[in-house]
View (cartoon, rainbow, N blue to C red):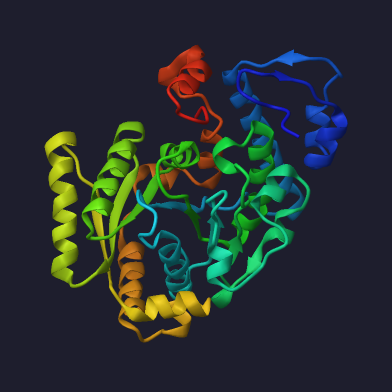
Length: 355
């Protein structure tokens, strides 16, 4: 049950907090059974205090300092059908092959299909973790090569519209996982709906997947334009999928970057391309990633090249300072430029979650 929302009134009991937070945190958060009006800025401040306490409790009970911040990457694609989720899955496996410990989170509420690509039918998902009905360990799926997958909350608006308490609960759960992960890949939904834009505004590293088709390139430009406007400090990279040749991919990238330079005086990085390969379609039908079932295919070889380029790419300064905790917190943190009227303005503009 949401108990903390921007612009709303907060009514809760200490029993809720005892259930959702570890001992020590619940004592600090126990409140009387009275209504308290919370301004969004106060909400964010309280949320950050709760998360700091949760991380400190974890470190105290485990005997370790809090884990180093994960490198967090949001994978997006303006147009549906460009192969974004298939890229996220096989890219994660290519990184696992290189010795990275990857956590893959399906953030595509309503149409999440990473579990389908793996031939799995999970009983628990991200929505259960946010709601507090199951621990994150029960929702995680142990995938091939040691990859860990947190499936989507299909049909449920999850991360993009999560309340402050739900985000704090997720941060607390993922703090434990951070001890054994190097990298977190967040597979967003297609398009530029409120949930996707919430993630893109919060991200510090973004990979935008497109194809050489004119419609996909137009949507890729719209996506990187929105990223540059809402989150200009993000490190954004393009990947061209289903290209006939390297020249075909380079032409597609030139089309996007030329328009970006003309109208935005900025352009995204180019990470690389994946060739059109019949093995990819066969892998989807087999529900087995092409990195495993067709490991010697042109697509698999190209994916390994992308993973190598990604690992060699320096992180943005913001990425070095930030991490999954910071990204999740920013989903419910009011944007400074909006000031006290943030909720009303964001709602009026269709901007979705206030961040």
